[in-house]
Length: 78
Length: 394
Image (cartoon, rainbow over all chains, first blue to last red):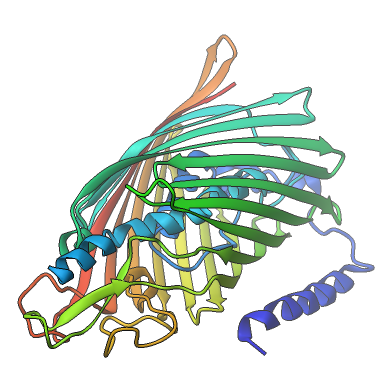
């Protein structure tokens, strides 16, 4: 089996284990404790127009592609 | 003369770089605008005007990018992007196999995001046009918060339709299509840290070559010892990428970020990259960023810098992007931002980002010299990437 085709299986297994581990566990970071995570300096790609361009620069010169990640807020507590 | 004709036909391998860019160009826009790492909140209303410039390896590409986003009634957010690449190329490929060229590529995209409770749905459409390549991409994304908003799952699908043309051959038109499947999970770990996981599979089908590209092969009948013939790629390609990224908020208001990605495809290319970044506010209005990134990949199964003979195998490639290589980059960014009470404008910022990249090719040779065929030095070059942009929040 090609190595690339095994990834989805590993990913699904990890997610299943990870999510099932959440059962019975209360969220441990309360909304009022998330002010640090709401700080824009914590955001991945806090300037989309700039990050879009850097993705383009790399994709034009590297064969790897995909899973570049996202931008936006960090914690949903804005 | 025959060699000259083949060289002319081969043209600009550097255009290959843009072919790949074209083939996936809409991806980053659609992804970055539509898959927040976490949080069922719509992106902020803002407008950005960016000047970008890539200068390296004999290639200069610059132009503007305008991105405007506006929400309606706190449940819908609409964004539009207008992007231009002005290309002036005299790269190693141009110098060795063809003549320098200039061209312009214009890309437009729109996105609509809809927020309902802890769910965000988004649709995107984009198109990229230039004289010999047209690309269209439509995308759908889904995001859901749960577990007290500590966990966010994202999923998305994109479909792309490209038409590959060829200069001076108006009847030349080849199709290529692309499907992208992606999945993401982000998890708040502590009040100061979070982690994210992204996975994406992309499949291509159709004409994946650049019609101008060529490979070289040993040819004792020529004075230089080699000749060129057109490249030939498979008509399908499937790739998988898996990335993990994390952020830690430091006690003195700074952020440390790290990410790594592994990649493989059915052409035999395996790649990995990692990046570490540090964000440090200075005073009330300045933000300073420093980052380092490393990338490396293996060659495609059908790549060779010098084939043993003409038509040596079914598939043939000699693009430097298909070779085994690595690059290292250092990036710095300075941003000045300030609150405003000027009509609807809440805040503005001015940013300058510089990235210095060093490319080292491990089995792609620089054939511009007079060395004996097959003994030429391996190619390398440095590039500087500049981003200067102005942003308004309203």
